[in-house]
Length: 490
Image (cartoon, rainbow, N blue to C red):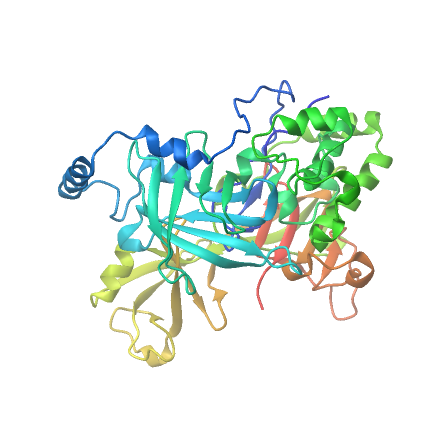
């Protein structure tokens, strides 16, 4: 057996959210699978009484005066902590975490505001029972991460927090501990490095996700949905595998485990994997994997950003697509958001302007400056720095903490995109197009229709012309071949 590696998700990116390092961020998802030599690898984790944070607190020997002195030195030297940059340790802590034994509780750690990116924002979240991609903030802290300090007393700054004090431990093994007796208290583990396929908890799986998996991989992946909720396994192989995972807490007997705890998305992916196991053909799977491995990278691969939204539009009829065996080659365009840096935003706020490329294919540029009509938009695109904004294009700017840039948008949070590629787009057979907010919908209710869910078979027929495949959340394999395309918006 070869276990799928812990999938790595490019930070937002994601998913998405999808897709997905933070639940509320846009990401391009890739599935860089690397074989793990031994799925029963040893772990130095032991389940002991007491909190990790208590042990972490004993590890620091600095006095308060020493810490204050170090803070002052960092401030005077322009250290990355607290200004527009972020330290290596702080970067390593940023990500999406889940609570050991109860996946319904999660933690997002992101860089802080533009002028204080080194002060991390920690949001402890509780999942909406009816929609897997919806969470509400229940605790929020601001963390100034210091070298060699692992335990922090922080004030809850969430809307309903009331300034309550909590102890948060940033542990040497990469986990984070929230001390206390509340439901959300416990140890939190980073999703991407801890789970077999973290994105399986954030988006629907399809046939392209099965490429390279063997039967035992699928079984482990399916049972991981149960493991993150603390189900006790009777199967010795499952008990052995998950028992070595530091996040696994066997707290519910199998006969008492209530599958109502699963969201619609989790139920959907469990059913999908179960069916895949029943229909698994080892020979065909090996042949498909070899064929996919032999494919050349997509021509646009190097153009795809590692984080942020990516808008893709493709013809959906066979007149504009070719069947290449294991994938389709379709005519389409790829666009990315128009963005400005923190420095550019400051320049505009000070009364200046910046010239931005608004179409990479033609080289067209436009000047962005402060709007004189804030009810229309914070900023406005004009032809020249002195251009009349009455004929301009009004936009707002949304700060993206993960990348430290501002994304331009207008109307009801519709991102302003610029084209970066036009030409053939490679789509793996089995890929799908889907509306982000339908992920939890049962198959009988979802159906297959444009705007909700479609297999990307490039056989669309419509008397008014085939509706293109569109989306702004792109999932690809490491070579840039499309696995899924989701639309998130209103």
